[in-house]
Image (cartoon, rainbow, N blue to C red; front, side, top):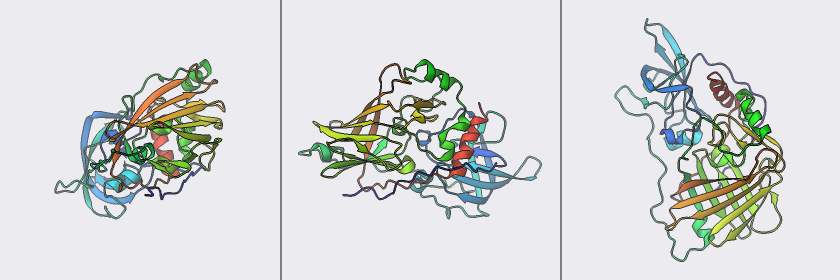
Length: 363
């Protein structure tokens, strides 16, 4: 069975985001599926906003719904409501035809801490009659896992959904053992200089954490690892010398092997990267980014739990320039039905730039 039909897209260019009248954020899915920092928003201050649709742009990493509402004096005002990326919107059954100009709508969500009108991870978007826009459904969990007589490749193959990490979207110090130089880099970090502004995808191990789907597919001599986030597809040989695992070159050279019922992937020769060890969105970055050197090495071990319903990734990353010791963490996934599609993710620079600068205003 072939799961992967989405090509790799690495859009790297110049940011061209335009300023919005008012930034408002809302996640159509539950908070576990949103990936950005929640710090700019006070989730104890929920509001309800009524208005009519002006425009809906379904984009990644964030869609924008513009509505027209009235302020306390009855004057018209425009709101830009930041919603989920294309994969989440599609799973919710929302596209650019779901809401059309003039549709009456109600938005519920949390206010920004800085007093600018805003909503994030609200209670949803609704029609005037109370009907929720979007299905609110999560991908279907596999119910017919066949493990009897299955070999390692069969057990590991499939579509997987990440479970929320214990430290996802938390602030504070990085749990990684940082060198003095890495700690200084993070202390002086400027979010507006993040590679994400230009749609550069997070690197490894940061790519392991965003709440998107992940696929594993074996052929006779290789394994394909498909990260839905940023449509990163790594093709790794089973045995032999490491090869460039992905066309952009950002993810280094890799080789893989089966070790009992586990898959082990070893990567090396990464290029130097400004956010090579951690991004602002993952539990190792925690609002900051960490660079990596050409000495970075990564080992991934994928194992399926008894019964085949869960996939456990244990990884170890080393970087002699930025880490004082090897760092290890674990990420757990839930098996989904094989028919679950991995959705397209084509990063839009205007959307990415707006999101990063929105975070920057809160620091």
